[in-house]
Image: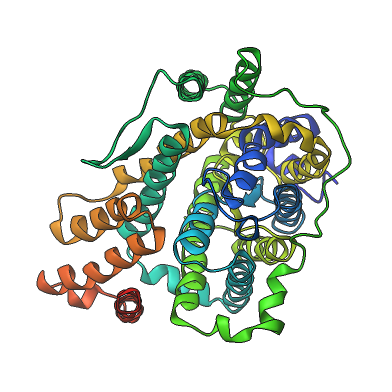
Amino acid sequence: MKSYFQFDQLGTNYKREFIGGLTTFLSMAYILIVNPLTLTLQSVPDLPDALRMDQGAVFVATALAAAVGSLVMGLLAKYPIALAPGMGLNAFFAYSVVLTMGIPWQTALTGVLFSGLIFMVLTLSGIRETIINSIPAELKLAVGAGIGLFITFVGFQNSGIIVKDDAVLVGLGNLASGPTLLAVFGIIITVILMTRGVNGAIFIGMVVTAIVGMIVGLIDKPDAIVSAAPSLEPTFGAALGPIFNDPGTLFTLQMLTVILTFLFVDFFDTAGTLLAVANQAGLTKDNKLPRAGKALFADSCATVVGAILGTSTTTSYIESSAGVAAGARTGFASVVTGILFVLSIFFFPLLGVITAPVTAPALIIVGVLMVSAIGDIDWKKFEIAVPAFLTIIAMPLTYSIATGIAIGFVFYPITMIVKGRAKEIHPIMYLLFVIFILYFIFLA
């Protein structure tokens, strides 16, 4: 085992790897709570049950998808990087695809499945690197930052801190409300823990907020802590249904946009995370990532498995950097994280104490982490600043990640051509320009 993971070459041991894997798990365990609540649209009142996914099934699917992704990453690519259903992508799945576009969640899962299969083919063929290299770095950064703002807005909205205002669209909510005060408390606690550099700060913040909520009577106490795993039956294989029962729903411009968005966001989220964590761990060589193909295969494999089980796109987690900071250097840490995700399935009863005020701080803080990409964008070049800014700002304002991406990718060729930099635009960007123009025509 030590030889396989190259412990001696990388200067590590079982203890450091175990602590690193545990730290990564604690840092990203919030997804076990947030993902089911997001995909089941718990924050949306008066929604027919037929439009909601089963919370227990999504919980198990989330844990198993994370376990599969982390284990494949650890055993095959040998990187200390864990995977789970991605924040941002789950919001796009629930709020944009299902709630706004009106696409059934079963068909949305089919879109995730197709994006994973395409991702796998592109990874194995090497085409993926070509597509990624065609997208300017500034737009990649803008997409991540825009998703961060979108997630933060959802968190503020779910907590009641930001509410609808007929006069100015949105405004400050009632901060004297119990649930809203609990969310504010959670934000403060999580910010303090994050500022102090506490490992697992987001998860610990959620736990503390939930406990305080139960003490003051805002949250009902759970009937149990450990139980049998919830059934996967409500979501397992649902992604395959539209393929056999109603294939016509899959061949539309709207569905193509959904698949491309899942694929695109996963593309750059994964690439950025892999490079960031590998650099932190000192695993890159000549600015390149060894075994990159295997790492990307782990991501696409987990997405396919997750879609079949019943969850949105699975991707690499930047929270893995917490595990690296704690000493992780090899894939053994990811194996530890994967096993912990499997064990977490039996703690489903605790999910009931995690309400919107408890999850809101996690959404807001993750948004802070994602929006930091803004600092790497060259704002002094107007032809870059315009498409980047529009990508970022359009996501929360239109309540749509896809629309934000589309606006930015339409304006980028325009500003670059007018500036006289047409030769710097990759041909693939022109193709994406046409695709997103068609996207807006379809919406109209």
